[in-house]
Image (tube, rainbow, N blue to C red; front, side, top):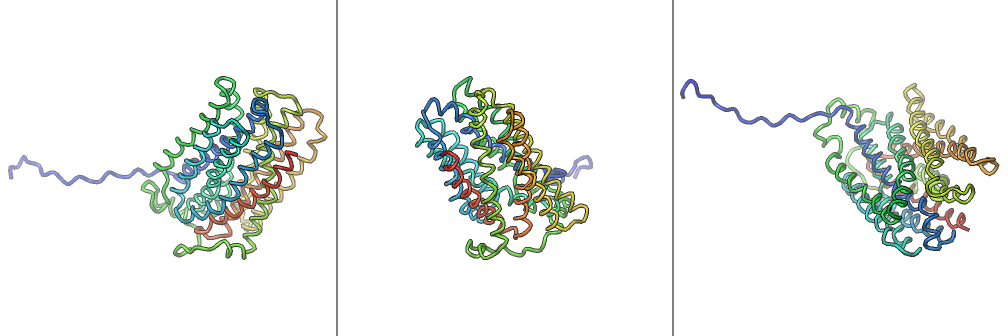
Length: 394
């Protein structure tokens, strides 16, 4: 070999780039999905005054359209929870968002209350996957001491979606019409799908997760062993399941009420038009956003101070439950902004409660059961909403 010749060494594999605090990027994706979920869910309520005038709906017909969504949601939640535990978080979450995005866009094709009910039913089928999949992702990516805060952050996406919707939807509807409002908002979900499929893996399979963060994620986690499936009949023998289910059944209808009926209430009671709905709705849902994160932070802060897991969660939930009672005084409000302030306190407290209730599921059950448990509880909440919606419509 000539002395000047160089022997090339074999090509080295590219060094993977570790992303610090990757779990919080994952939480950001869950937040994004939940934001899109609630934008799509909120569009109908915002456009209700326009659609009621243009299509001639009465309150009972609108209540039946809301009922169609909640019926699909109730039916699909336990089934979706099972699918998530079977297919895994990555694929099942993607499928859920694809289904609800198509259904959201399908509202633009509807022209009667019955057709809106069909589109709404499809939306409920897809949106049923959001919270079971997101809670399962939190369980996979966060240690117990951080789960309430992570849940509060992603759950706050519901309020951000409810804030963005009254800012986006009236402008689109006034500029181009109500049908493009459904098309544009429904299409956002497909951008999320692309980001999700490029980014999400389970922690042990993620090439950009550092060893130190993986150790943190798996800290304080009991050895769960190989996946063990459990039937819904077996879950229903556990009192923890009933506590979660009944908690959702009794409290979810409050949030359904704010989401679907608040725009109409402001329109009828205070004479607001479509473009005037934005400020009061943004105020309510911004407060709810703060409550969601604050409720999660409260129990996490107590845990950091050495308070037991059970006491921290229950104390935070008790504080939130007491604050919800502000809604009782709305009927005595002398003007719109007093009513909005009282509703805002109740909405914030409800979302703080919800963040801790969701986290309880990940505290009480093995990771492999989370989708099923959250699906079962979500079904209870949807049934509560189904029973509530027609009564409000009448």
